[in-house]
Image 1 (cartoon, protein in one colour):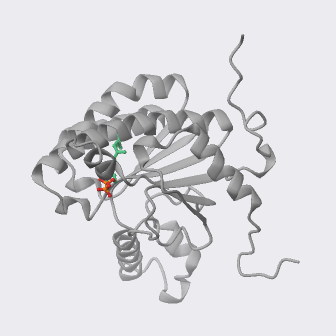
Image 2 (tube, rainbow, N blue to C red):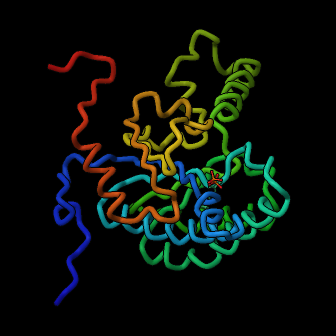
Amino acid sequence: MPETPFTAEHAGLDPARLPVHVAIIMDGNGRWASARGKNRLLGHDQGYRTLKDIVYACDDLGIRYLTVYGFSSENWRRSQEEVGGLMTLMLRAMQTEIEELIQNRVRVRVSGRMSDLPADLREEFADAMRRTADFTGLTFNLAINYGGRGEVVDAVQALARKVLAGELAPEEIDEAAVAAHLYAPDIPDPDLLIRTAGELRLSNFLLWQTAYSEIYVTPTCWPDFDRAHLIAALADYQKRIRKFGAVVE
Ligand code: FPP
């Protein structure tokens, strides 16, 4: 029997009401590993497998943008072993996946303070962004060494430099000007924010951009999050009435 194609229609979703941008806090890798008596890095390794499947699932469904929280600006506080393991995993993942991402015409982006990353990882990311820059399929945006407050600080500094250079008047700094100086100004705000592993917090992720995002939290740890979980999140999203502060009858 031919395999059922993985499309929004087959998943029982309304293709016209899919979120344009899905953002994910991929939490619970450590708990997943600990529950199995394994090293936390094994949880991250499994999390990478999940991430690969979810990237192509989003692409198959016709979602335009996927942003994932890969490494926060606070994650440096973890043990040297875990930080080093994550850097190695991200480097290996990028090297392993780039050709398949290109074949699928996925546009890779990286958001965060790149300058603090190991040089080899920074170069790998730069190379992936350069090689996929013109693709028009799914935009896969990796938030790495990313912090929402830091991003706003970086934007404010860039604006202040323009004011100092006489290129901008203080009164010209409005919401659009701040948004235009964030790390990925061309990517629309997330419509749906998914957080795995049950915690009810934003953890410094996309603070500016999630002002009107719909939030979906699942108790499932990230390594166990699969296409069925993604569809459940999208189906839940399609039941929401988005009001953006207005009254909707
Ligand atoms: C949060 O789980 C997860 C992370 C900090 C890392 C996410 C990394 C991956 C999914 C690996 C692949 C990444 C890329 C970019 C290729 P946690 O460790 O905080 O879990 P816990 O709260 O249960 O301890």
